[in-house]
Length: 302
Image 1 (cartoon, rainbow, N blue to C red):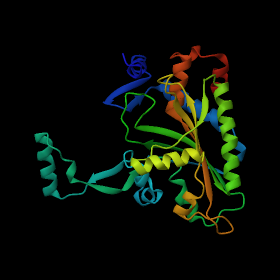
Image 2 (image 1 turned 30 degrees about the vertical axis):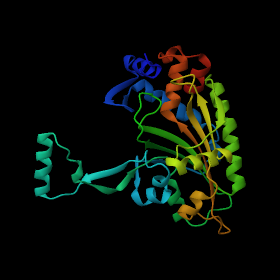
Image 3 (image 1 turned 90 degrees about the vertical axis):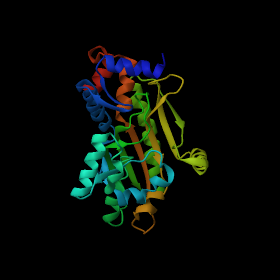
């Protein structure tokens, strides 16, 4: 049996996750949610004194900001947008006929002003831009958001709807690079405490198409992105459970986020894949949380 299906079936059999009939879209058990909640508290203990503010975003963001991000240029295969019925009584009657006949009714849907959030940090940047020039200390924001990426898979670590916990640093190149390097070390320390096997490696985002392959190679060559990898679904192909990203001034330019001297702000972020980290803990420590190693339980539950 395929190893991916095997682990997924174990999660279903143990009622950690519940099958919805759509790959990558699962109901989560109370114990799964408790592990995520405790991990978030654990993560917030690292660098809590450095945070300037915290925000939680809904799973949707304004379409205008989604377009400004450039996501459709780089990752059209992963994007999701929100559509809704906007027709008349006559149109509704036609829609009901389609439903009754089992025909496609989605052509009567129209795009709304909402896109599904692809990355937790995206909604932050337009908020910061509206505030005017950054103070000399920049910004250091803790975020959490549900995100969507259209990549259905039998791999339970590759969900279509998932949560990201992020820390975002906005400021000068020096401030943002120092932030990223600090978190690369902290991320590894966190995994050692949680007794999870891991490695950090240079990586690239899944840019689309031939031009995207060139962009990915450039991103990796410049070491703009690193990932912390943990064997979750496969030991041969470990899963990226954290990412450490330096965006240079790309988002500063896109959203017109300015430093005190008027130059575009640089940004960096560290992202935690909350579902992936929970799955890693179940994979390596078992499905019975009460039987996890005492050091892991102490780190998460105190």
